[in-house]
Length: 462
Image (cartoon, rainbow, N blue to C red; front, side):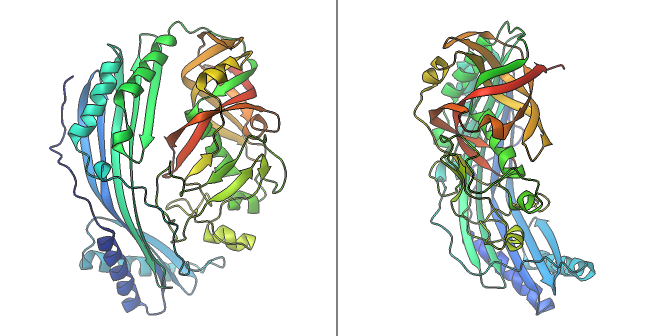
């Protein structure tokens, strides 16, 4: 395997939360020195983000950046503005940022729904951190890639291995101060034959957990097993959804359902106290789970906590930001995300409880159905019923009488996700779970699911 570096990257130095907190406090001081009555909050993140890309059997790019990101929000008698800075946090840069956000606040209309700043409260004892990941080098990632490529045994391969480390500090003029750190690493690759693709993925807090050989063997096996795929009649089939597809389902359930904003606007399917799901479904948003990654507080400085949204099939709650919590007459659950204001409260760490079935037992339990690797191009059609349309990808197989019969061409589906997980619809849940990175810095810890019915409406081309 040949390695080609696009940059002479070296191991990044670990950064400290103390430096981030000092910058946050300095920014608040700059704001208060210019506007003594301003309400203000500042989040400062330092760290590194590195990525090693590969294609056609060799690494073709190593890229890395040092992160220095500042988010500030001020309120002047309910006139609220937000500003960001990516770059040095020296006094002059922070002073200009303070001027900019105050100028913006003065020309903004008053916000009658301004919920105020987070009061002082301690975070949960979370430290999803691994030193080796924070200090990972291009050679470390290239070794993982090399193992993936070798395991493909001559198939065309492509993908990326990434390592990220972030330390963060939050401070506001109400006296709330929080600091934290997190790392994560991932490998996402494809092995390809002339007629089929197979994917392999693994994510973890620790780069040492990423086994390129195992991930490559999985991708190659799926690619080879997917050769000669044929069409199948549209209709309703039992399905086994692997973790990537399950994470996609949960993302829709949270964004359009278990979210204070659509609940307030009556766009959500959620009915608190009703058995809307199968008894095997227990779902929460939980940064404290040892299997996930992330910071212990949100973009508003609210400590995160475990939020039960479904317990043994019964809908128990939704997630909130300070704004959606104020409208609902409750407390924030720590689910504010930078840039996510238009969406409301977004999940950071969805966790779906595991079952007891092995992968082989999941397949053995299917009379006639389809094994689905993952979804893409998924789009919501009706938020209240959670009807979503999308496509399969990276491998679909027909299962007959508990055995894999043959590969199937990609399919389009139109399916209510709530219905698919409804009472009596979940036939088995795997014991193994995978950590699946999602959008808006979310990480889903999910098993595979055997579902009784899924509505496939046609081939991928129509």
